[in-house]
Image (cartoon, rainbow, N blue to C red):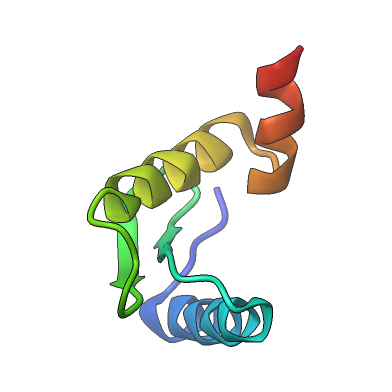
Length: 78
C-alpha cells in the first residue's frame, strides 16, 4: 500500500484550498492516507458547520473504493 506523509498531504491541501478560492466556494477539505486515516483537514472560513464530516466521509469513501472523489458522485447516481 502506498503511503502519504504530512508534507505531501499539506501540498494537496494547499492546492485544494487554492482551487476553492478560485471557484469562490467555501467548504472543508480532508486528506486521508490510502487506508482512509485522516492526515490533515481544514474548514474554510464561512463554510457550513456540516462540511468537515461530509469532507472526511467522502475522502474515506474515495480511499476505500480507490477512486477519485469526483467519481463517487457518478457511482452514487447509478
